[in-house]
Image 1 (spheres, rainbow, N blue to C red):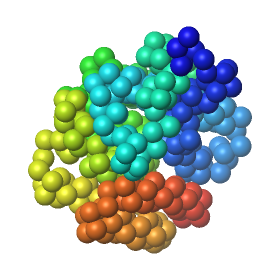
Image 2 (cartoon, helix red, strand yellow):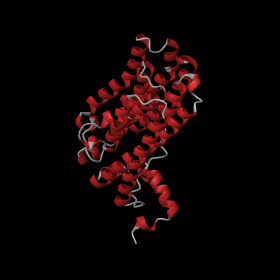
Image 3 (cartoon, rainbow, N blue to C red):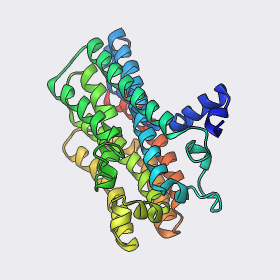
Image 4 (tube, rainbow, N blue to C red):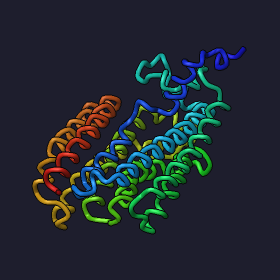
Amino acid sequence: MSQALAVKPTGRLRAYARLAKLSFFDYYLAAPVVWALLPSDLRDDPRVLWTLVVSTLGWVAMTAATVAFDDVHGFRDGSDDVNYDPKAALRNRQRKPLLNGDLTEHQALRFGYLTLLASVVWMGVAVAVAPHTPAWVLVLIPFQIAISVQYSHGMRLSYRGGQELVLLLSPGLMALIPYGLTDGHFTGVIALETYLIGVWSLLVSVYSNVNDRDGDREAGRKNLATVLSPAAYSVAIALISLTETAALLIAWVADAVPGWFLLCMVPVLVMRARQLRAGLGQNNALLARKLGVDTHRLGVAALLIANLLVIR
């Protein structure tokens, strides 16, 4: 009997949870941000609440499909074996259930397709219960699902130079789409918060890619880390980080947000400076990655406060 088949049912459930990366919940924090941004009379509207819940279930399923397919291809091309080398003791190999035999390729692929189907169903339900269905949202939903699940599978966008764009767009759309379904409008503040949520996600992954550069390059992945020199990549990270501040200033100048909103975001910018110091100044990519996760969570808290106390 293979090792994967010998795993107990409860152990297999845990393996699927690791495959879906359920412990990394940061993407789904967009829902409370959207809720806080809505007018106060909509925050307790049952249709609004159901839309936020159901769309979040859609994102969970979509992300599970995306990372399951990514793990399959990382296992096939050997990049995960290199990037999660137990001798290096830098990354938790338990996050990759294919590497330790807890799941087979077939099981992971089946899980990916089933969760992709669940994502489509949940998003269909979200559209059905939503108070608003603007045309631009109906276009963005299939676009988001398509680019996300084809990150490593299908079109294999992360192997063709599209990695950073997907990592920016997909998490950001987790804010924009439900806002469109619940409020029905596209505003300057949701444009800003969509970008912030997207770039916060990206500023975790760009540091992961420093550690993964050799394995990804051998596997043929084309991202900024594998195609640029280390010095040029550091410049790219710095520029991406600066766009966060630039977006805030542009929104303020355009009168999309007041000055008090920017003050709420100061702790986030301080954390971003710490991340830059760790990643580029101290050359500690994995510490910078951790600081990126912390900054994302702090940013969500800052947006909740700003939306509740400043915007509305």
